[in-house]
Image (cartoon, rainbow, N blue to C red; front, side, top):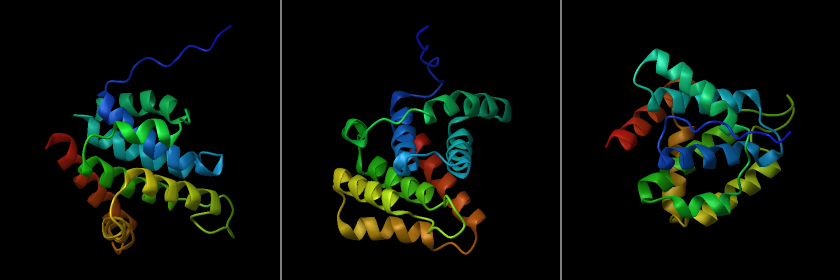
Amino acid sequence: MALQPPPPPSISPRQMNLLRIVASMAWADGELALEEVDVMLDRFGGIFAQDEEQRHKLQRELRDYLMQNIPLEELVPKLQSDAERKLVLKLGYEVIASSARTPDEPKVNEDEAEAYQKLIDLLGLPPEVVKEMESAVAVPESHQGLIDELVDELERFIKG
């Protein structure tokens, strides 16, 4: 019996592309950590949904799509603006920095660092923009401050 693809989610193709690029960063080390899934579902569910019920429904829909590991080379060319490129860079960096496979492993392992460098190369953003996006992730004093900042930025991008 063939696997059925998941039903199309209630987000736009552009939004789905953003999700898939960030998911491919999470897959860089060959596994998808629960913390990485939670970060992505929380961010995208909070941004794309209008209310709490829709947010939970969307998080369930999107979980299936996070399980698909699509190559960055197929996804990055579909980005339509510098704002999208900056956004996926920032979210991708946050996702790979959100978990380590073992307590003594660095937050960003070698595979993730390699995938992140590939993302940077494919995005073609100037080095100063890359540094700016990375420092925006690293700077907030608290993890909650980072989450709030990313959610605000995503909302401005999606609704703007």
